[in-house]
Length: 331
Picture 1 (cartoon, rainbow, N blue to C red):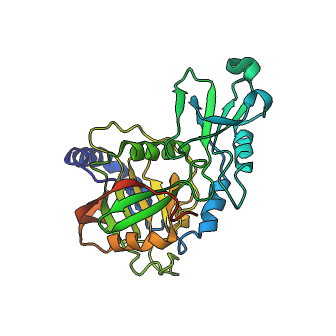
Picture 2: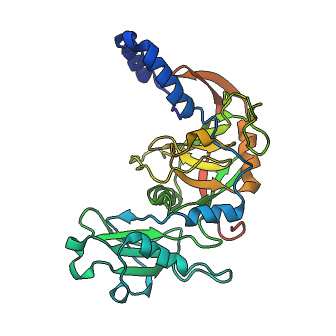
Picture 3: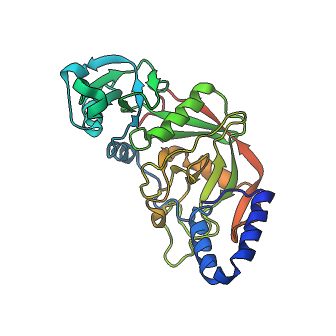
């Protein structure tokens, strides 16, 4: 997945091409292939989007947290009385308290001490907690000196945020236990209520390569167009910190993923099995909203070439901002 290039970047590329003329036959093939997978997101979605139950199933398959972070909150199970041997088991213990079909989750955050030397007698402590506002969790401390690992669990009906555009609101189900660093950044944007500069700048339809459910049509090319909308989530006046690579499942119709380490991201309009394990997926657009993304993909564009790959850039970028979603469209 590529990014827009500035003049200085183009100059550097030209200079490198001159230096590497002897390797053109190898490098061009490699660059074209990697860029086609990067900026093109040609196969970013395969079937007609995840069903609501599938979104929750995929979310449950992961159990990750953030090291050197201590979340605060009311304890529903005290770590001094409950010890496990891994952060994953601590996370799953929290999830076990969130399986009921009725009523709220009893646990929506967990804190684990997993460094035997640093934790001393507290090694293995697993604190299960309840946040007052799961979309704005309370941090007690963070940094290299913090011995705790913490994570969030979004139960049924929780963890959906809105991407508000002039064409409608895209409801995105976040995956905190598959991509905790990514979700933390999204929640920070949500809390700041500031995303000036956040926008979609690239839009490519499914063309004749993918059907209306995002399935690739046999023998059809994988793009262009590449069946995606792409943008940036870097707000003006902020310093973006690269997001570490997290869970990289197959790209499906509706997948929301980073381009590299961010802040560029994309929403796929089709299934892209060929991109498996290539992109950190931190959420998915709810099936009922995918038509909004399709509408953006049909907006007027101008052609550009990114590293010899033809892409379509919006004539007018589409601004976006994050919006709190309560319980109206819960999964």
